[in-house]
Amino acid sequence: MDRQRMEMTNYGLLIHNHILKLRMLLNRHRHKRIDRRVRTVWVRDWIGRRSQFGFYAQLLDELRCEDTVSFKNFLRVDPTMFQEIVNRLTPRLQKKDTWYRKALPVGLKVAITLRYLATGDSYHSLMYLFRVPHNTISNLVVQVCEAIISEYAEDVINTPTEEAEWLAISQEFSDMWQFHHVLGALDGKHVAIKCPAGGGSKYYNYKGFHSIVLMGLVDANYKFKWVNVGAPGACSDAQIWNQSDLNKEAVTTTANRIY
Image: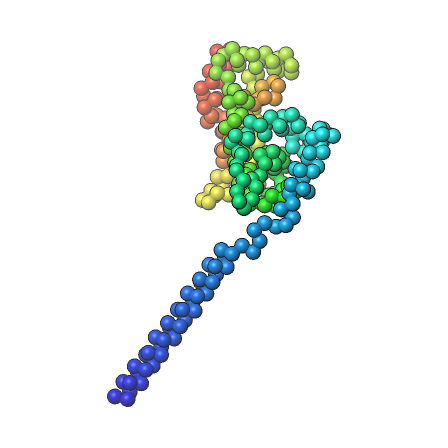
């Protein structure tokens, strides 16, 4: 009887110890979740002074007024074109202020995006330049790019569909560059990416890094007439072009008729 009582007591103590350990683990997990929810800093003080000392509010504004050449060198567009882009994208990008913070000006979003596209600077580098958090920049760059495509695609890239349009391009190449029987100048550009999951060697190009290919066709005035984006980096320019709809349906047919 005493032995059974001793075993029951030990068994009860063992269960009690397990319960205590379980409570400790649950409490520790709960505190970790609370710690993750608590913001130590809502916004860094120096970022909060963006409108006073940020690049967009200070130097870029000076360049706009005093040195338009440097302005264009920095953003790759002149002040007039920059303002046109801002005006056209404002309906798509403008957000309302909240109780917690003021919305970023559309001009600032456009400036950050143009600088990123021009230089490939890291988001952290742009954060210190424009005083905008890097995670915010990572989102707004995508938003601005999508807005630019939606707003400008039909205006900027008009792929010829008629024989007369191709003939006009060919004539410009003859007149301006003495290149005869040319319907466009074609080239590809590797855009570096992180290898997608399961991508293997599909995106690994001959230059030694993972990429997708941006291929473009321009006329005699350097204006894009057609673009193809997203082919895996391992593909050659010839492969991408041979598989493109433009090659199959437009240029080849037109060229055969013309030449």
